[in-house]
View (cartoon, rainbow, N blue to C red):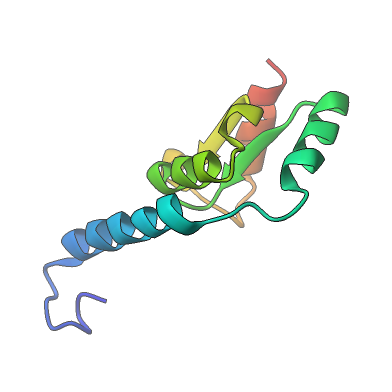
Length: 101
């Protein structure tokens, strides 16, 4: 994107601004899918649950809070907290390891 905007040295700044803008929209407007909360509650009653999101931590937290799901997951793992995000299995394996503790 930085090159497309003619600012090849501004990649980090553009990425930070994009994350800020998307997080603002998610915080203000995102909605959980119908039945999501009930599905997580039923699942958590039977097995440990975790969320492994391919978004940075700030965006994952904003989405979970906005959707009313933040307190439902004892384990939350974001893409910027692992060396290889999805589709690499590291996120899933790490989240599962934390869920078993």
